[in-house]
Amino acid sequence: MENVTMSDGANSTMYDDYYMEDGEMYAPCNNGNVMEFGMVFLPTLYSLVFILGFIGNGLVLCVLVKHRNQTNLTDMCLFNLALADLLFVLSLPFYSHYAAAADWIFGDFACRLVSGLHELGFFGSIFFMVVMTLDRYAVIVHAHAVARHRTLRTGVAVTACVWTLSMCVSLPTLVLTQTHNESSAISCGFPPDSGIWEEFDLFATNILGLVIPLLVMIVCYSRIMPTLVNMRSAKKHRVVKLIVIIVAIFFFFWTPYNITLLLSFLQSRNVMDVDCHVDASVNLSIQVTEAIAYSHCCLNPIIYAFVGQKFMRRVMRMLKKWVPTWCFPRLPREMSESSYRKSSITSRSSDITSTHIL
Image 1 (cartoon, one colour):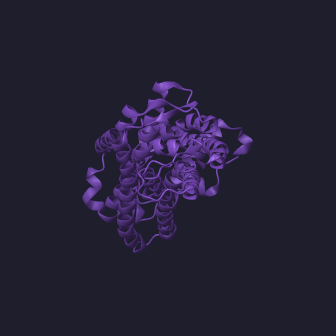
Image 2 (cartoon, rainbow, N blue to C red):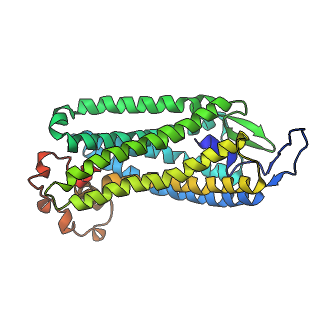
Image 3 (cartoon, rainbow, N blue to C red):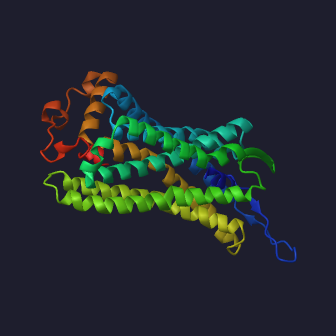
C-alpha cells in the first residue's frame, strides 16, 4: 500500500518524463510545489496520527491486559484491533522522516520490516473490524444460535486465522520491498520491475481493504438495526446512530484514498492521458487523502471501545492510578459501579450494550 504512495506521492521525483509514440520527449512536468507541500504536510500529519494513535490504542491494550481475567470474545477482538492499529502507527515515524527528507536512510532491512509492519497493521485492522461486524450480527440477529459457540477457544482460533490471512496478504510487501537508488536519493518500495506485485498490492488495498469490508458492514448493520429498533431499550437510538457513524466514517475516510491510488496506478500504466496538471493533482490528492485515511486508526479506540460505559469505567479507574488525584476527584455518577445496571433485555447477553454492539 505505502509503496504506491511513497513512490508516486510525496517522495516522487520532481520531474517525470513523458514520451510521444515516436520517442520524442515532452517537456518534463515540474511537481516541485507538490513535493514541497508533501515534505511539510505529511510529516506533520504522520506525527500527529502517531501520537494520537499510540496513546489511544496503547490505552486500550493496557486496559484489556489489566482485565484479562474478564476477557470475552469481544474484548479479544478489541485487543487485536488495537494491536493492529499500533503496528500500523509504529511505522509512521519512519515514513515521516522519509517524507520530510525524500531519502530513506534506515537501510534495506528496516525498509522491508517497516513496510511489512505497515501492511500487516493495515490489513489486520481492517480484518478485525470485519470480524467484529460479523460477530455483532451473529450475536444480535442470531443470539440463541451462536451463544454457545462464542468461547475463548473460538476467539483464539479466529484471531489466529485473521493474523495468518493478514500476514499472507502482506508477505509480498515484506519480501519484495527494498531500497534502490533513485537520482540523488535512496527510495524504499517495490523495485521498478515488480509491476505484477504493485497490481496485487493495489487489488488487495482496494478489494480486501475497502470494497469487501464496506459491503460486510452495510449488509450486517442493515440487518442489525431493525432488530435494535424493535428492542425496548433506551439506548437503541444512540446505538443506531453509532452504527451509522461507523459505516460513514469508514467510507469517507478510506474511499477517497483508494480512488486516488487507483487513478495514480492507471496513470502510471498510461491508461489515463498524461497531463502535467492531472499528474500534480493526483499526487497532491494522494497526500491529502492518505493523511485522512491513516487517521482512522486514531478513531478506532473511540468508536469501538471508549463509547461503552463498561470500558470507560475501566479507563477512568486506571487513569486515577496514573495521574494526580485532583484530576479525577471521583468517578462521574454515570460511570460509578452502583449506577451501572443492565436492562432486562440487554441482560440476555453481556454483548448487547453500546460497548459490545460496536
